[in-house]
Structures are given as structure tokens and as C-alpha cells.
Length: 323
Ligand code: 13P
Ligand code: SF4
Image (cartoon, rainbow, N blue to C red; front, side, top):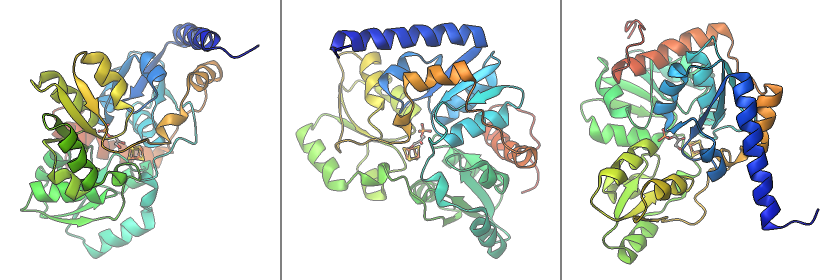
């Protein structure tokens, strides 16, 4: 068959129809992170940031959860929902930042700082969550650290989010892990200055994974979910978006008439873009790739995640003891 834009459109629509049928057959729900491809956003039952998606996985009235995101997100969903089947359509979709911390090195750091609480950004493996006292996301990291009794905190793996928390919680001593997001670290201060000069009325929204110099130039620092809320309620009409460019699709769709600019070209998380409609259909058809965490790790990681949800107002029944 000769390729034409028309039959490409037909192919996409046929895949969406197939996914819809399989979803009903499997009693499945599709959960989608804000950085996913446009066509994946279109098939979402729920889309949002890491915190919203953790909660959505718990609330979902479904036997099967198809998680269109990266491994640590699907792992968290599986840990919080031991009775649901959690599928990651592309098993190689990892988060490079999550791979920057090892259990051995974290335990050594903890041994050297026995009075410190270990806070792990959700962008970490289940094994790291199991060794941590409490988890956090970019939308609640400050609240989580403020909630701790310990004065000292080991924060893994993102040094930029850790530095941002330190600036906001000066009475704590935060020991930073040297991890980073290879996508957000690319955003440069000069690019923000240039974008602001080109669009002087635009508000600059930055994800806390960006470098401190970039964050200093921001009008608002928040999670991806926070950006949607800010744009919706803002009287401004122009925004410079300091995070992955997958955000643009829904921002434009939900805010017709408002304009969005990227400071850096091709600000893409390659792992987030691995998931395609074909892989989602394959995942539902074959029930792959199921994310299962060994029980001993999952049980400890669940406490870490539930403590976070407890701090941010989600009553999960986890005992807040032990640190
Ligand atoms: P959010 O929780 O803000 O969606 O961030 C997840 C992430 O991976 C950012 O790079
Ligand atoms: Fe990980 Fe960065 Fe991709 Fe987020 S954008 S999933 S932190 S690599």
C-alpha cells in the first residue's frame, strides 16, 4: 500500500478503535503521564503528573491498569495496587535519573548519617523506595521534607529538586545525591533570557528538575500537573514552558487562545516517547508487560509511598512510625 497522510490517519483511528474494544474486554483503564505522545494522550482515561497518577491507580475501578509512562511509575502503581494487573506497554521505558542511584551506595550514605531521614523522589526504583523513609514527587517535595522530625535529610536521586527543597526548607540540612534528569538539565539560563526577551509578557513556568539558575528566572516552579492548573487560572496569555514538550498538546487543547513557547528545541524525554498506539494495543491483547515487584521489596516500598500520600492528605492507613 502506498503511504498517504490519509491512510496514516485511518491506521491511527483503527488502532484507537482496537484499543477501545480490548480495553472493554480486559476491564482495563489507561493511565497516561503528561509527557506521552499526543495520540496516547487522546486514549487516556486519566492523565496527569506522577502524584495524580499514583492516586488514580488506587482509585481506578479496573482489573487491569495500562500505564503509559516509565518503569518507576508503573512500579509504584503495582506496589500500591497489589490486586490489579499493572502493564507497561514498552518494558524498556526507564527513567535514566532513577538509574543514577544504587541500593549499596544509598545504604552506605545512610550508615554514615544515621540521624538522617531518607527521602526518595518517586523517580527511583522500588528497591530504593524500600530503603527510604518517605517518597515525594515534584508537587509535594517541600511539604514532605517539612513534615519530617529529622533535621538531616538524605535526598535521592535528583540534585536539582533537592537543592530547590533546601532553598525552601532552610532549617533542614539536605544531603544531596548527584542524580539529574538528562532532559531538564539541558535547559540553559541564556535560553530563558532569550525567550523572555522575545515574549516579554509571557510567564515562565519551570519544573524543579531544571538547574537552579533556570529556576531563579521562573515566575512559577511546579510539577507538570501544577503547570496545567497555573495556566488555566492565570490571566496571562503567553507562557514559556520549562519542561518536556509533550505538555504542549494538552496545554493548547485545554487553553485555546493562549500561546506556549519552548525555551529549548527538542526538549524530549526519549523514554516517554517509546510508547505508541501499536504497543498499547499489543499490551492489552497479550497482557504484557506485567510489572510485579518481589513481595519483600514491595511491602517496604508501599510504606514509603503511603507515608507520602498521608502527608499530602490521602488517608491510606499507613503507620507513620519509624523515623
Ligand atoms: P511530574 O510529577 O511533574 O509529572 O514529573 C515527572 C517527571 O518525570 C518529570 O521529569
Ligand atoms: Fe526521567 Fe527526566 Fe524522563 Fe522525567 S523527563 S521520566 S526525570 S528522564
